[in-house]
Image (cartoon, rainbow, N blue to C red; front, side):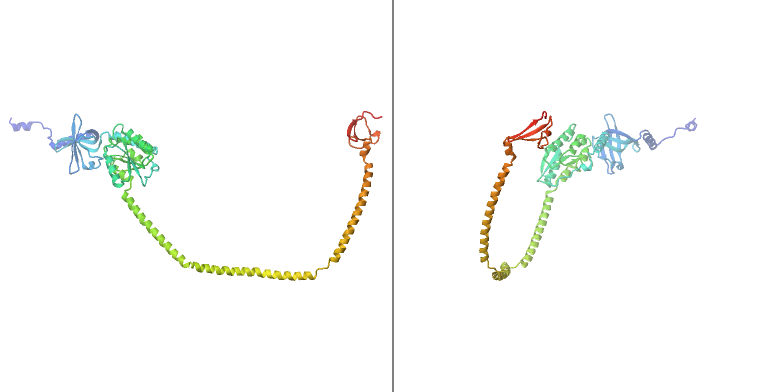
Length: 449
């Protein structure tokens, strides 16, 4: 049997796949077997293509896998990964057909540990918000003219240099007080809170800036601490939070009275440029001068009006003198006329009285004689009456009961005071009063015979 005969008599063979078909079948198998999954690893060989796609290798200590993140997904990433970054990616396992390379298509990327940190951030934010720590009513307005600005940050931080440069540029007259503290590390949160409490206790600044530069969520985690939030909320002076960059948010930002996008922005919000104040003051000076000039001009015009209405002082004095003389003459005439009239009337009445006055000299002599005769008569009658009174007194004295009592007699009266004249009026066991010449006595009657 020749070769052609052998081929015709052989059983039918399995279908032959092309390389493209094989890779497509493997790709579908991988995608069905591994749905979207979170994978952690370290970034290596990162490349950002002109198309906007990201290409990198994700590796750990024992293996690596190629990864691609297309522009439509990469534009929503919160950061651009760098060589050596620890990340977590949500990816679809697939196969790149043209090269036959197994790879992962990344849908989302975050820094390693960000998931648990973000959940802790959300829990703390909700708790403090429920306690009212972030309520707008607790926010205080910044002072208009701060004289001293406090800064809570690390002395070695670049953010401090940015804040100091901004303050010096905008308001070189403002004093700065630094409250040094670490802004990153295991114990940084407690030290940040202690620095804020120290600034509040000393109360030697008008506004406080809490700041640090940008970084990963782990770098900024010290500002997501509950103790720091309470220290910011309880601070005596208004607090501006300038932590991280514009896209970074921390618990400190929500607790502060004002959030700034960057530390430099915090410094710009804390003070108003001196040039602006000087310009405002110059404008105020111009307005005041203009108002004063207008006031002086108005006063001058008023004075001119008063001057036109005002008479010459000498003429006004002469006018008042003439008026006074006229009033004096009127008063003199008014007083003299009634007096003259009264004098004339008095003279007339005196004449009439003299004509009608009677002659009383003879009557006066008769009156004197009558008075003498009346006095003699009165004295005679008084003597006669006095003698008669003496005779009557002698007779009365003879009839005086007291004289009878002095001769040894007594007056007996009963309890009612009635005089008892007969023995029949006396009753046994009764009390009688006996009046003697020199007093009285009460006597009990034993029996009457």
